[in-house]
Image (cartoon, chains in turn purple, orange):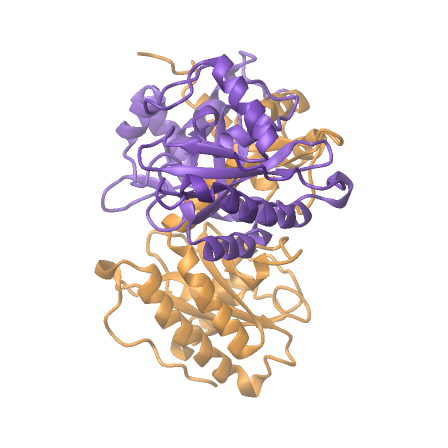
Length: 264
Length: 264
């Protein structure tokens, strides 16, 4: 059997294009036109049309009959739901809701994907705040936690882009920050990602001392006041301990005590 | 700009292959090996490996470091979550939970996708019952509802496969059944899909009298007893009325009264 395309990279290229088109919907809260999608993916419009038609035929996208714009389709909701339940992420929801209620601020759970932290559960998914579910590692508390207790298979981010004038863009400064994060047991993003936003994050650790997830509390610098950061980190750490049980299989679960929170 | 592949259908073929590989995970609760996936999709193993590597690189799949098997990855959980919230499906969850509690049986919400009903919200997604989220239209109460109040753009299913000795496989018998469903205001699947399973379903209707969703209650024939079917259908219809408000935009929402439930 040989159904392979002539060029060995052909199939992989189309996979990357398909997934790039799907990714566009992660960055947008609106329906997207074929030309929007062509521009964002830098694909030819004819290629884009062809790929979009195939994606709509299988229910991965859906085309609005009035506007001809595309949105994510029922197959994506279906498989996403399976992926979500298969990872037991639904078990994290009541824990995050309780943490959010106890602290009065938004609680989010993220994993690392390449050079970004991707929020999969939590308050940032509710309402209309669906824009920024992926964030660069170096400029977020979530990302600092994922970098401070790293998966050895993952590489360090190479470009440290400034998002505000507080973003850490020097690799040496980032290394010093990660050493502080490990010593303190938590990370802070102090308006390094967006002005007016402060976050505190702790790791959800496995037996290999790796942050499988990062758990963040997000609010303003006034609410997450410097004098209370230790308290917020303690609350998050208590929730992270529960998530280590709920989300990590017994064989991979940490048995030693959590690193203590050391507020500076 | 011309980044198109030489053959005009090339890209679409790779899209279908990519989506077919993703679809395999909707039908399985286990992690899948590359050879499992090649067999299920009838792709060459070399092609499959190449596509899987591209899909793992983008986080749409994830490879277990111990078993080398694949599962759905964080990008799928992320985009699925966005698709789910974008369609406001999270607003259906408390309504379905209340319906399930009121009736004591499982409540599910489905949409039509081709010749299948796909469950997107409800009790069938919980626990380990993640196998049968897609079901042929003709053998389910969900499907009969979607066919009885059809989208004119959709075609009738062509092959009516027998799943039990009660499955309706004759097109004329199915048409007669759909006429009964419209007159009664609800559909019944009486062990037509699996032995020991009875379901009652009602439509979530829009202004064009089209079932945008189907809402089902599922249990055994003993619990969903014939004498009580009307009561269960009434409970489901009350929930469907709420979902017409929560899930359908005002401009597309039905203004007339629901079809009454007429228990036979």
